Length: 18
Image (cartoon, rainbow, N blue to C red):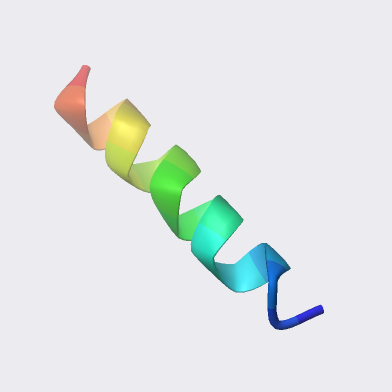
């Protein structure tokens, strides 16, 4: 589950960049 944390964070960062 801990592995999902960085994945979700990356997704949020991607949206922020847009």
